[in-house]
Image 1 (cartoon, protein in one colour):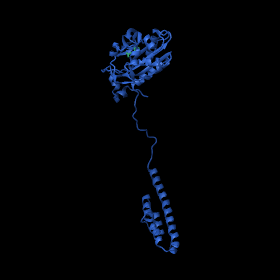
Image 2 (tube, helix red, strand yellow; image 1 turned 90 degrees about the vertical axis):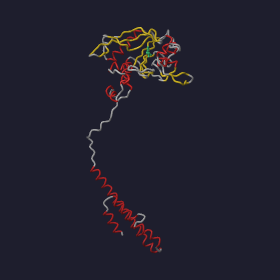
Image 3 (cartoon, helix red, strand yellow; image 1 turned 60 degrees about the vertical axis):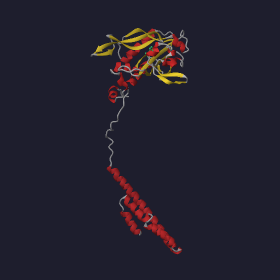
Image 4 (cartoon, helix red, strand yellow; image 1 turned 45 degrees about the vertical axis):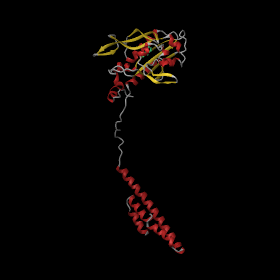
Amino acid sequence: LEAELMTAIAEADTPEKIEDVRVKALGKQGAITALLKSLGGMSPEERQSEGPKIHGLREGVTSAIAERKTGLERAVLDAKLAAETLDMTLPAPAFPQGSVHPVSQVMDELAEIFADMGFSVATGPEIEDDWHNFTALNIPETHPARAMHDTFYFPDKRDGKDMLLRTHTSPVQIRTMTSQEPPIRIIAPGRVYRSDSDATHTPMFHQIEGLVIDKGIHLGHLKWTLETFLKAFFERDDIVLRLRPSYFPFTEPSVEIDVGYSIEKGRRVIGGSEGWMEVLGSGMVHRRVIEACGLDPDEWQGFAFGTGVDRLAMLKYGMDDLRAFFDGDLRWLKHYGFSA
Ligand code: PHE
C-alpha cells in the first residue's frame, strides 16, 4: 500500500489530483483510515506490532502529500505569474472630474479681494428670526419693506419666535455687531431666499454683505472700498462708479452703486461709461441699527453694502440666464465651471 500511495502522490500533477489521493488514503473511507480502524479488532499483541507500522505509514503519507501539494500550488502560482503581465506604462483610465461652480468661484474671488483689504469672512444661519432679518435692521412690523421682500415664513415658531428664511445677508451685520467688539471689517457671503421666480430671479440666490464699523468712518471710505473691490474683481482700471441716492431702512444715507459699462462686440462689458448698471446697494449704517446692537452710534459709525453673487458671476463670466445656475445641468457646469 505504501508503494502504491507514494506512486500516486508522485504522479499527481495538479492540486486537485493530490486532493483525490489524500481522500482515498486519509479520508473517512480511506485505505489508511480503514487500517487504523482495524486496530480496534486486533489482539493486544497484534496491535503492538501493527500499530506503529500503521501510524508510521499515516505520518509518511501525510507529509508526502503536504509536500507535493505545496510544490504543485507553487507551480500553479508561478505559471499564473508568468502568464499575467501588468503594463505599468499604460495611461490610467480617465476619471470623470467635477468643476468648481461659478458661484463658489466668485465667492472665493470675493473673499480673496476683501482679505487683501483686511476683511474677514462672517456667516449666519439661513433660518433666521424676525428680529435679525428685519426689526434690528430698522424694518419694523408695519414697514412696507417686509412685503417687498417676499419672505418665506415657517408655519412653526422656534423658542416662541417666528422663523423665516433670510431674505438677505444683512442679518449677518446684526449677528456680527452683537457678538464682536468693533472695529469690524467683515464680508458675509451666503444663500438668501425670496418667493420669486423668473429669468433673473430664483427663490434661492446668493448675496454678499460687507460691513465696516469703526471711528470716523464716512462715505469716502465706502466709495474707495467699493471702487477698489470692483477694479480687482473685474480686473480693469477703467471702472467708473456712480453713487445714486437711494433708500434702505438700515442705512442713512443710502446709496445705490452704478458701474459704467461699454459695448464691446455687441456685448455689455464692465468698464468705461457708455451706460450705467446698478451693481450694489449700500450706505452708512443707520444709527438705529448700531443702537439695536448695543453700540453707541456717537462713538461708532460705519458703512454696509450688499449685492448678488450670482449677478456678479453673470456680469464677469457672461451667463445670461440665472436659472441655469441651479439646474445642475452637467453640460452647463462643464462649460462655465472652473477647475479646482
Ligand atoms: N440687503 C439689501 C438687499 O438685499 C442690500 C444692502 C445691504 C443695502 C447693505 C445696503 C446695505 O437689497
